[in-house]
Length: 167
Image 1 (cartoon, rainbow, N blue to C red):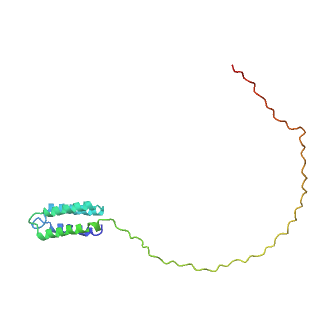
Image 2: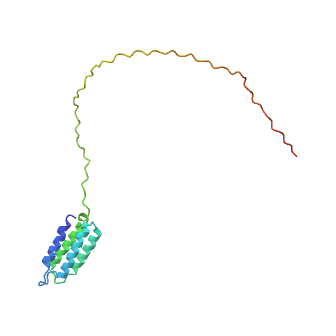
Image 3: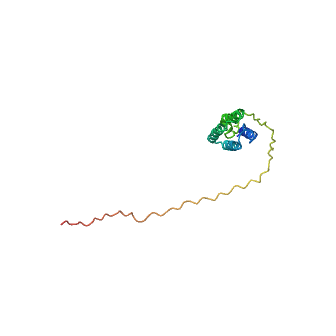
């Protein structure tokens, strides 16, 4: 709630200034207390972002203003009604969460890094160790021959099952 508190404070100041027991054109204390309580409820509802409750409390304030004694000064009534009307106009803008700014999608300039010269170390020649002697090859052994089977292979034999008599 950004601008409603001054409006609520305005009614509170009018109520305090308008209260008077000796002047019948001012607001009686009991009516001033009721309007002050309503103004506090409007402010609390607005801070809670409860627009429906704010509107209910504004209607209540209008009924309380309409219920003031006939002897109440007409200009004082008009000021109170103007305060209520102003709050009604501002409900949508003042009784909502504060908006956080959305980052813009504007392009931003980025600098391109410039190439910097980097020294590269020159390779140095390192002496290699003396070459190893070539290995001597061992002679490959000749394959050994496997003995051939001495027995001829056996052919499988077929046995017949005994015949069963039917009877």
